[in-house]
Image 1 (tube, rainbow, N blue to C red):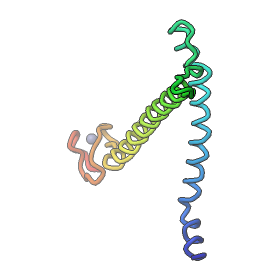
Image 2 (cartoon, rainbow, N blue to C red):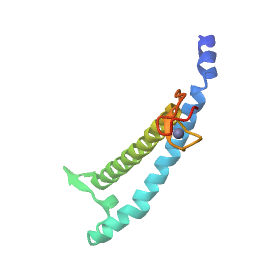
Image 3 (tube, rainbow, N blue to C red):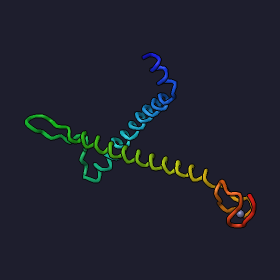
Image 4 (cartoon, protein in one colour):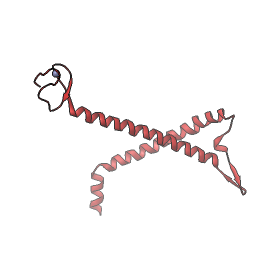
Length: 127
Ligand SMILES: [Zn+2]
């Protein structure tokens, strides 16, 4: 089992994962501050001074912290949206990398030609 654990650490994925977890934690805090400190006061101002975090629902003599729950939902939506943007940008970057590998530039006419081409289809020069 110790050997398995060593192999697991050696693969390097552990470091990536650790960095991702730490980044996610820090990022979550940033979004939390953004929602609590900037977004919710703005929404509060728009809705005539309603403090979302202070909204409580008294049911059967028990305070339900509806406002804090709403804050958490809004934070989750923002994090999910930002993650979506990051993944989208990352996928686009990956696609461009793949596209770059399949073509090269003709040194004579500067057209884009297939990387394995021996003759340019645009200016017919040998490559
Ligand atoms: Zn050419």
